[in-house]
Image 1 (cartoon, helix red, strand yellow):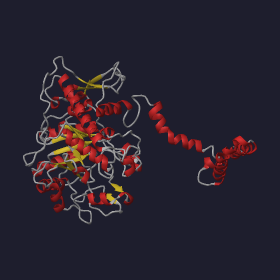
Image 2: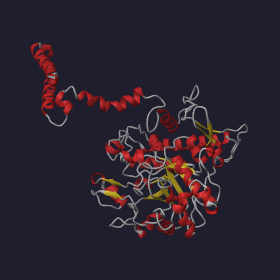
Image 3: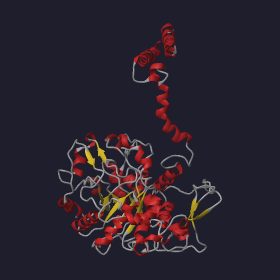
Image 4: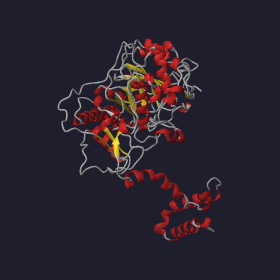
Length: 525
């Protein structure tokens, strides 16, 4: 009998409307509802709608509205994932040039594990040179580059729309920092305003591939000669879906995207899980050296989310054995974002940024390579405090992706994978992209980056330091529980210089060092 609940109500409403002349216009509402209820009762696909015609649709209505009701009505300043409201607010405020101060003290529970702090000094630094930047490029690099302390992390044209790419690159030009292309290659929108570019090469070799999808050195040389391209980044994996690869469906491969990536319009654009240009650490290092030569001596590095620790050591051993050096390594954390990824990969694969950054820092320091090879961090950074923490863990600079999406107007609607982004950021829909005004958003990109780097310098000054690279692990404190805390160097192990070469058995990662082979990513037995 429950299946008939909606019908008496609708029939009574129709009868009343037919009997009372002033209500007859409502027949336009009640008759369609009766037809819809009849359809629900007869269809065979949804049990709830079959058992509760029409009424069950209210559930879908609330399901659709739930994310918006939660975000704008229920959510507190400290709620919201992956970015809490308070985290998004600071980005929005800085991007708009509005007041970013917070009244009445912290809302964090300072006795819970959500609180960590940097040690300030009784003698703050007064006037450091805030124009200082790291220099990327070993002695094997003839065109070193000085990146900003915060840059735009990898986001491809195709994942983001044309207006978003254009606004990001214009913002990078205005603020004198770099814009990573993501693995989708260098599009016309990256080139339009002349902002510094880091060209990311993924396993699809987009922009420098032959017809079979393999690396084409001649095409690479032609593109890498562009003076706008400052560094080359070999993408081994990314935090949100490490080791997975990806597919851009053929329906989304427009003529413009096809021309940018060097693929065929309308056909699936595949990024394999693994590279075809190399299969061992030695081959990878030799290929990196070849890229540096083909690019005219520009810095070449790798980007990865740390997975099996012995593989990091294998790369170190390959550099030691060949004498060839990478110029930089970018560590992406498992908390990093992407346009679309399997839930199992986002939630259960990959090492978080903090542990990954410490591990790679230890590998470089332990092999005596940290003085030559620069280290960068990428993964959910949005504030000066986040930059300072990365510096404490060994990073020379940081990259951010989603924070810069917020500067473009992203409201964290989590529609990136549907092509229905409401703000025109992560979509190829021209109608939605129209809402993103390039010149206005570019200025927001610039303001956010400048204010966040300024906050990092303020923090380092408050700590009595001359620059952010002097921030050490002992400056960062973390809670162990509500009654105990300690500096990060007492919680994690930080290696001394050369220890992996001189006394590897003395470190916690000794077994991984023993497993590492320069001639294979597989573990030694």
